[in-house]
Every structure is written in C-alpha cells, then in structure tokens.
Image 1 (cartoon, rainbow, N blue to C red):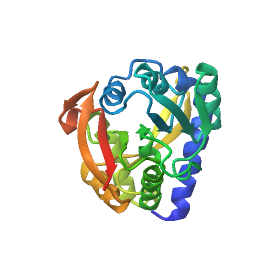
Image 2 (cartoon, rainbow, N blue to C red):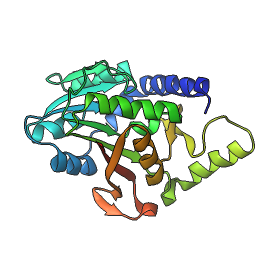
Image 3 (cartoon, one colour):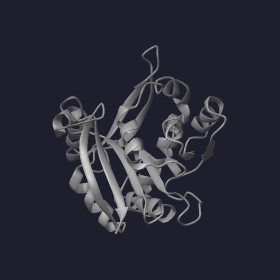
Length: 240
C-alpha cells in the first residue's frame, strides 16, 4: 500500500471514531470474556499496563480488578473525552500507537485490544509494533486481539473487497475492508477500516519488529475455537 493511501486511512479511522464515539461507547459496556481471560493470565498486581486504542476505557475495569495500574490512549479525542467522563479515576490521553511519546520501558505489558486491525499498510504496522516494543519492558508481553475476518460470517466482506481490488476499484491491500457503522435509526455513520490478519501474517510482522509470537489462537467468548468459528485472533508477542 502506498504511504499516502495508508495515511489517508489512518485519518479516516480517527475521524470515523470521533463521528460514532457516543453510539460506539454505548455499545461497549458488556462483559469482555476474552480480554478478562488475558488480563487474568498475564497481568500481576501492581504492574503498569498500556491500553493502546482504549476506546471508552472499559479494559481499565478489568485491569484494576486484579490490582494492576492502567493508562489508556486513543487516536480519537472524542472517545478519550467519554472515557474520562465514564472513568474519571483513570489516566486517559489522546495518543497514537505509532508514536506514544512515552519513555522506553515504561510499561510492564501493552494491550492492543481490537485496535491493531485499524492500522493500514506494512510500514505502519511494523512501526506500531516497534513502538509497543520500545515502551514495553523486555520481560513483558504485547497482547492483542484482532477481528477474525476469516470466520464464516465475515468472510463475504473480505472477499467483496478482494474482488473489488482485482477490478481496480480501490487501492487498499488484500484482506482490507471497510465495515459500515449504523446508528440506532439505521443511518450509515461511518465505514471503518479493518485488516483481516492471518496467524502467519502476525508472525511475519512480529519478526520484522524484533518480536516473537509466544501464543496465538482463535477465540469465541474466551474459548479456543477453530479459525472459521473464532470471533478474534489472539496474539501474544514478546521481545526476542
């Protein structure tokens, strides 16, 4: 993907989440089984956690349940405003996973929960992982979940955009999609950029960023399942 196209998509992600921030935040209030499992498995009391792409900040509740310390960043100023209103006791800041501004080795672990799939293009993805590696201690983990666009109910969206790419209708990469967001009145509000990662692709990106994948699986409601049934691809990365 050309850098200009990738930069335009990054700006679209920021703009789209500002547009849908109020409705989006209201739809992100339920129990998050797959993330709760990861928090319980990897995070210890007292550890400082970066939530990169924090949205309305609901991961903060899970981190503090096990007495971890939390800091959330998001590219959308409107979502950060909502996060601060909903959870004023936590530290939320506007920021990008491409350049967080934090010092080296600030965090014990970093979380990329349903955010890395919004990063377009090979160059930006490697840069994002390198930035997470820089601010995460070498003993810590970079834990991410990405939407599984290879499961049965989402495959058609991925193939639609792949066919349109063959026909020359867009300049995005293979397995890139734009997924619509509708408000309560069923009016189209945004078309959010997503990339459908494969496990092999994550391993390749991790290697280029100087990381290794220590665990990777598909999940549905916190349970390990086959690819075609999984809602998310879970990947746990660590410095080599």
